[in-house]
Length: 268
Image (cartoon, rainbow, N blue to C red; front, side, top):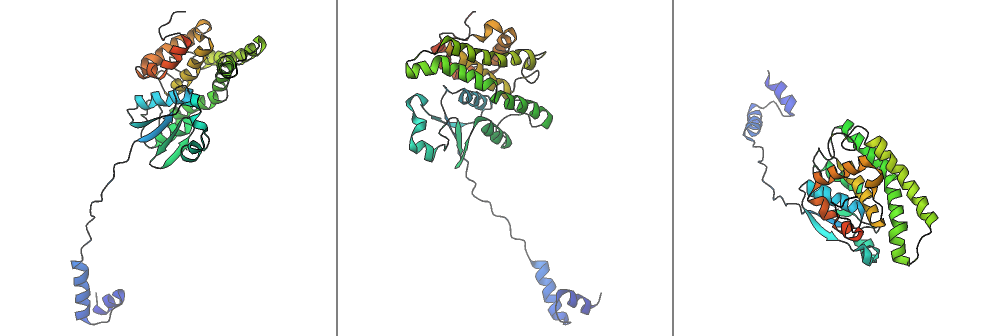
């Protein structure tokens, strides 16, 4: 290879001394070593919740089962703490619980929080699968229950227990019956479809779908409704969910047990 050819490649003159200097510079050049950076340990997420809230209970149980550290930020819904202007500005613009703050990132809505933390590797796969087929089955239930089981159980609870507590007015029997019928249509689906031939809602093992559903159904205890009487599959399933999630399940539902006067072992 001629000196002139090398010089043309390097954009230099044909002077051999100049070429030698250029080659020496290349050969002796050192790639700068990467200096270790000071890695700051990320703080645990701040979890804003009230165990009176069904999805708050669900995430509380999921976080505990996942061994995920979090900072307890209890919000007293009964005192209207979520309605304060500071809460709206600093915590959650929707003024609801649950919500999280993760190193300055604010996120609301329980299922969105679940998926966010799963993507970060905080939720184990046996609770919320990574494999798209298994995950889609869990998601199918979460999407279904949000506009069916959750809505109707919550409305029954609100009509029978919460509104009379807040207003002092007793709802009519016709109104109670209407909400009970709507709720039981969805409980029928859980009994006859979701639990058909399975120990849990989406298969043979507990997932977040079971935890979210159980927390919604347990809320009706406070409205003096015992789902175990009419639905034997749901009764057996609730027992399995509780056993799989304890001691955290009973901790999360302590207020429900107290208000309803029906502990977890209460007989029919």
